[in-house]
Length: 241
Image 1 (cartoon, rainbow, N blue to C red):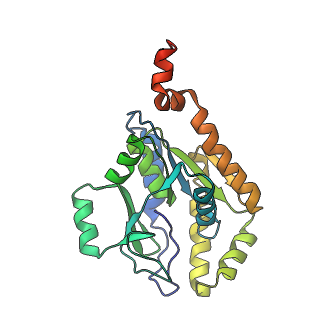
Image 2: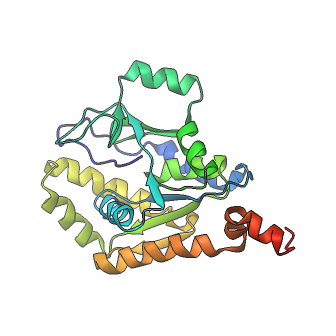
């Protein structure tokens, strides 16, 4: 999902007890599609307040080869958000229909609202050779690994719990009780960092952005990625898979 920040008056809920077990099962299952696409799929997850959205936004501004996906959500727009730009804002019954049609790579209930990533939108992009980045919660990241085995999972950590709380307070979007809930959920979410391929500690923003750019660039230079993206060159040079 492009973001999981919500209105301060949203119906906040703690992560369900089954969320941790479900994510763990997904990570262990390892049944993701081995289909080789020319493009790369980067999946970025983080607890609320760690700076995930700011980092991804900065990456998109700097790297024109990386494209975002627009997720579907049942929550209402906030601020200057527009339908089809930040999210596709849809009613619950329409979301239910998409779930029934297996239209999502993943979907999850995050802080009381549902978010889902459309399968076709992602597949079309990476099939065309584009690199795609998803902002998502850890539950969704584990589900995506089951669908796209070659997805690159990146987790953003805050430098400390104190700094995470300070960022949530400075953001000024949530009531104190909501911040407490986000902090409790953060502990559950951060415990899943070991299931990701890369971990970035967002202490100094510029350094964290450099780390994120480095991961994207390094992934493009991996043998498997180069072979997918530059298939004609490999064939001309007589390099076999």
